[in-house]
Image (cartoon, rainbow over all chains, first blue to last red; front, side, top):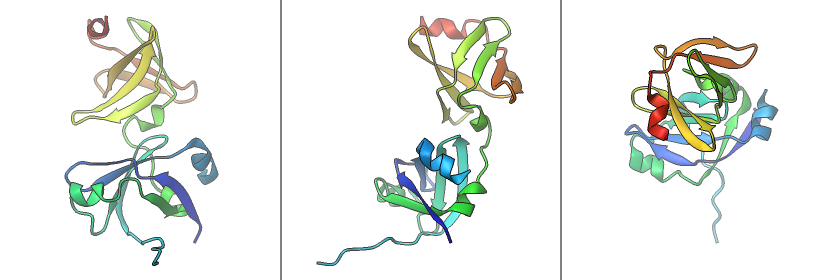
Length: 32
Length: 130
């Protein structure tokens, strides 16, 4: 199982407990 | 002193609204208060799980040019936000931030090869930014 570090959870929003994560370009590129 | 290691949370749902923006729902995190407790925590996820989450709505259009049928070339989409009614594109026009609605009424066509969204924005929409 290969794990990717997405960085930090930026924000909680909505009423259902969703969390927002903004992922840096270098991480996104490593996932492609 | 005890140092806690990573805690596993099971992802029950995930959405991707832009090239780099994801929303996750975790098992056991059922409301906003529980989600607030996770803000600032580092997140790791299995690579293949992340790949499965495809952009929804106009999330694919981050970095696209907006060309309006009446107004011509407006600029590049710098960010995309989710609003209750629809997604909105953030772009800079003449150095000012503009938020433009992204929905099937105003977006007439997407050229994914040229990375252009063609729009037919309502008359006067940009005037509110003057």
